[in-house]
Image (tube, rainbow, N blue to C red; front, side):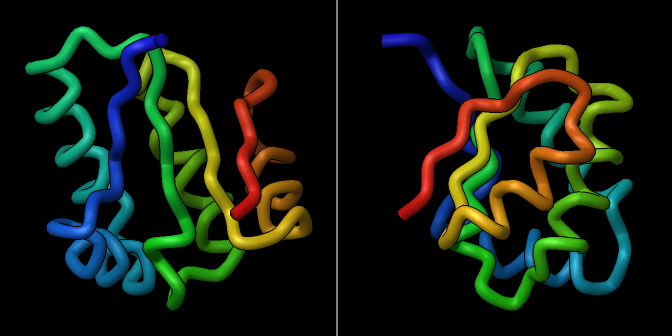
Length: 100
């Protein structure tokens, strides 16, 4: 198993959702970088199924912001393929995608 960093957890989902819906992507980036500093993960997963108030377009904006500083591959967990495709379209590379 490849070690993964889960950006969204049940404990921080509401906080991250609030940041994203208000357009405060820098706070999410700060949170991600702080947590990544303490881990040896080989990729970061963003579980959008835990962020029901976040649109696919907002998710795409988050991915754009995160990839400016996060240097490990991304995984995307989405509620449907259309959401996953919208978010993946802006990612520089090919993210691992899981649809729940």
